[in-house]
Length: 99
Length: 193
Image (cartoon, rainbow over all chains, first blue to last red; front, side, top):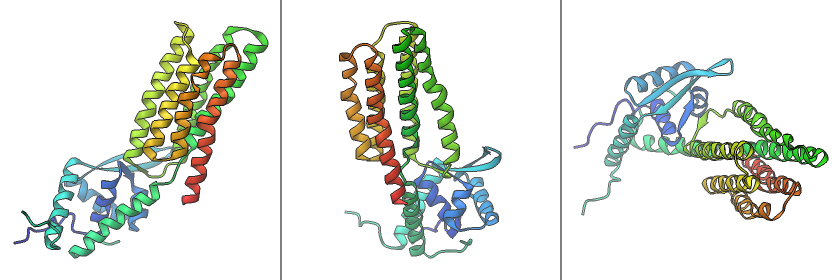
């Protein structure tokens, strides 16, 4: 029987955010909004959900006079992402057969 | 992009696409740090050489500190101006390399001015050449790798050439090691966008 997919990651925008953060050290809110082509409101809500789950860290600071929100994936987030991809592979029959 | 549910295939495609987009966007080269430190060092060297060779007053050696005094604020300005919204592992590693090389360079330069007589021009080029070569290897950019190793080899000339001419040689090596490859990296980076 297939394991259920992590509902927190199995949503388009949250998965996109996690995929970006997995491949970089950190990314700010504007960069994530541009890359995911999402609205500020929706992105904000999804970032909060990921932060509450401990998948990402969010730091609010200043860049000159403007506020800047920087997001970074956590070790817990990386492990959840790996589990999610492993489960996906199971669904798609991509796991190598055991010898 | 909405909060929609994906099927399994769409999920994998999305992950691949997001990672690929991010890689493409951040592969843009950035030669600005090389240009800032390269030009600052060349100009300060020429100034020190001119004042020392015309007056013979060793106090002009304190002007070497103009390099960090100009270089650090210029770097802060450039970092703020070029904020790309994303920091990669490569950015972080290169940052660490230059923090270590920079601190070591500053300590050894201060020691040479205040404490001991050291072949400082040779040491500084050897250190900065090593930092440049390591950076080139990390970003896999040949002109920076070559210029770094060229700097390491050319640094020994500063042990051979004596007197004020060694300062001119120092400036020339920085031109070859940082300024020229910095321009090449900038030009290549722009042509990729």
